[in-house]
Length: 234
Image 1: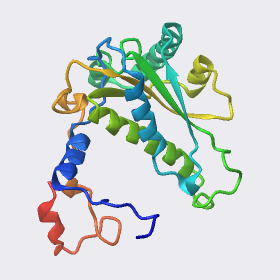
Image 2: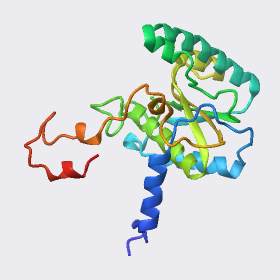
Image 3: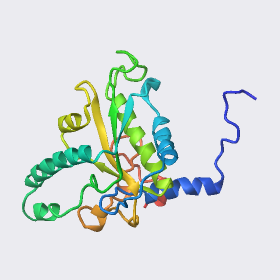
């Protein structure tokens, strides 16, 4: 057998179902973090999963900053508070009133934060697959975020992505050079529970869009009316 081919690469039905369970039960965690520390071997598994994300041209553009220091967390939280107040002003009327009380981060509560960045110069100026879509390195780093998130869920660990932050404030708090692009600040830790549905869905902020309303064929918004796949989409 070719040594480059994986043996026993097929998933059993139970393994397949576990993957789907992980995907469907993943949540953006905000307010239910426990103070329990994450053992180093578990954290190493999460980072290893993130490091095995697909990347354009195999450039692996990410770095991972593990944040444990309380003072650093407070600096990140202060930056969030400023951005959060500004964001509230961008909504009007009832939408603004609904936004203000939302719990949108767990920076201080989570035992650790993980900042994932993208070094856009890694592996040189010309990268396979990025020649015509230069943003693919950014998307690759986002794949690392998703890998870590799903691995964390499989470990019964919660993750919350804090996106209400200015990139430069995050750079200042974590000593990130100007040439490096912050991708995600993640709050990571064990939690008291996982919600059945995403919190914003439960709060009535927006409903989940039906899959059948966003699947098309051959052209943008293209359908012939004979697509049998649609009967299987919820």
